[in-house]
Picture 1 (cartoon, one colour):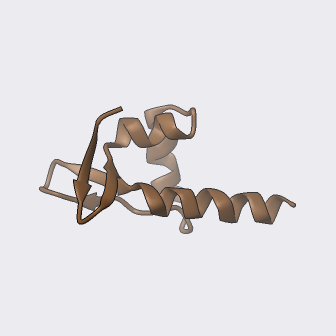
Picture 2 (picture 1 turned 90 degrees about the vertical axis):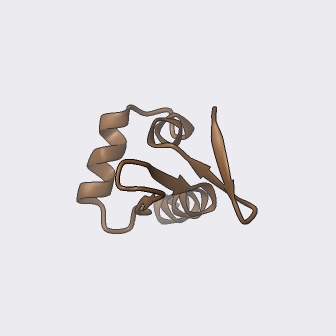
Picture 3 (picture 1 turned 180 degrees about the horizontal axis):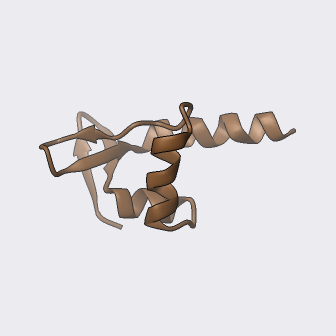
Length: 68
């Protein structure tokens, strides 16, 4: 899994972010488009989106708490 580091935060490329959840790239794209609670990517350039890993972790925890 390739990552970039920005001020101590891990940045995941979209493919790696999808793999974190064990899902496909299309699932990740659908989540971004349809789920307002899902973390949005940040763009390092107009063609280089990344997801902040700590935001993905926080979203996953919130989903787990809602399911309980």
